[in-house]
Amino acid sequence: MTTDTAASQALRLSATSFPAALPGVALPAYERDKVEIGVVHFGPGAFHRAHQAFYFDQLLSTDPRWGICAVSLKSPGVRDALSPQDGLYTLAQLDHETSFRVIGSILEVLVAPEDPEAVFARLAAPQTRMVSLTVTEKGYTLTGEGKLDKAHPDIVHDLASPGRPVSAVGYIVEGLRRRFAAGLAPYAVVACDNLADNGWRLKAATVAFAQAVDPALAAWIEQNGAFPRTMVDSITPATDDALRARVQAATGLADAWPIQREAFTQWVVEDVLGDGAPDLASVGVTLTDDVRGFERAKLRLLNGVHSTLAYAGLLKGHETVFEAVGDPALEALARDLMAKDIIPTLTAPRGLDLAAYAEAILDRFRNPEIRHFLSQIAWDGSQKLPFRILGTVKDALEADRSVERLAVPIAAWFRFLKLRAAEGVAITDPLADRLLTVVQALPGDVKGDVAAFLALEAVFPADLAGDARFVAAVEKAYGELA
Image 1: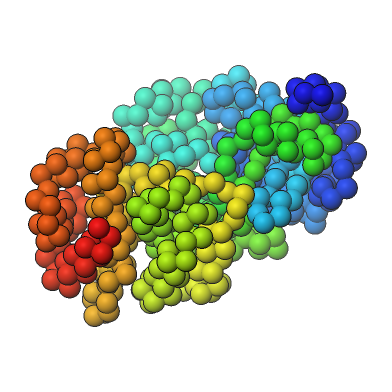
Image 2: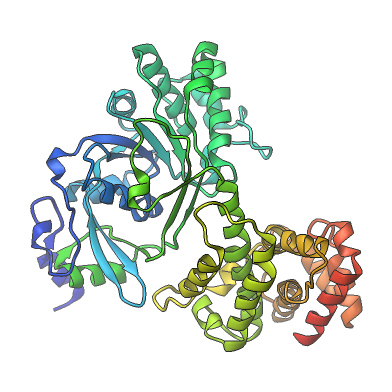
């Protein structure tokens, strides 16, 4: 029997069929017909369904007020896949052992352009207490300085036609306007995209938009609106036919759009939601007054070591993070970097054990089910390394600590650029042309090459590029990587 034939004969996942799932599949531990919608979420892509919807699925077993209305701002794809399944889908958690869970927290999927009034009805409903977003950084319609981009075509449109918005900000403001007019409290707005100070930036954009519509509304949002900063983390590979087949074999049910992610998941939320908020802490969400501390730890420990493994691993012929961390020398480098170089530059926020977090990161890297390609992590090094590595270097130098290990990813990036140019492979980086020019003019000796790379002022601040301790460390690493 072919896979297509098997799929056509399998019972499709739905509200009536899910109890028939094969043993071992986790099922919703609540009666869905008794759940009310308390959350409106914009952007129900794979990450939301693997992450926030997963947390609310757990919460519904003790508090039925937090079902989700998922709103797509553009494509009907999620609605078309999930509506025949009554909003249900399967989450495959990929680790050394893979587990499967049917998620039931999404009760409704709306396509905003098709029926904006249905979206507004949900936003204005008294039982709606939270609006969340995963719309990518560009979905916030901000300028490079992080302010509302009033020249953005979507914002120009929405300010002219606030009753038929196309942007997330436009929908949020119109929903708040209707609540304001009805005498209802504002909903909390929870941004879940990887944007520094995401909640604060979104609040400023929302208030700026509202100011152009109704100054009294803007003042009400400014005074009463809760827009917590957040941090989210979990690797979520794209869905493919192999996953669909795997899910069907494991559950006995056909699922049009299952989701997969690593077992590790993290959601950090600034503790400003106030009374009446969902008890997110009860399902593993970290509530804190120091989101920046968590962001800094993730950036330096997770992302910094990712970049280190990418450049050093590619030079040794590895393709994936799993392969790289399986190399004893690279694993030792990663472990020492975290314990001896990075953690000493961090102040642990309340609720985060840095040593345990570092060990969890290494364990995630060892996950055989996740194929995270080093070549992809290596993209945009000129943009990533200043934040992932150079900040740590600066702190270490100020504390008069060695930067020999921290110089390795920098030197490995230089060697990686040389290798790509020699192979005739395009460099994926906003500064690609400039980098290629530098590589083509390298003198060929260690000191000359390093000096040429460190002269890239768009990457290396002058004070760092001129620090003899840093230069010596990079030269040493560059020579040893030859």
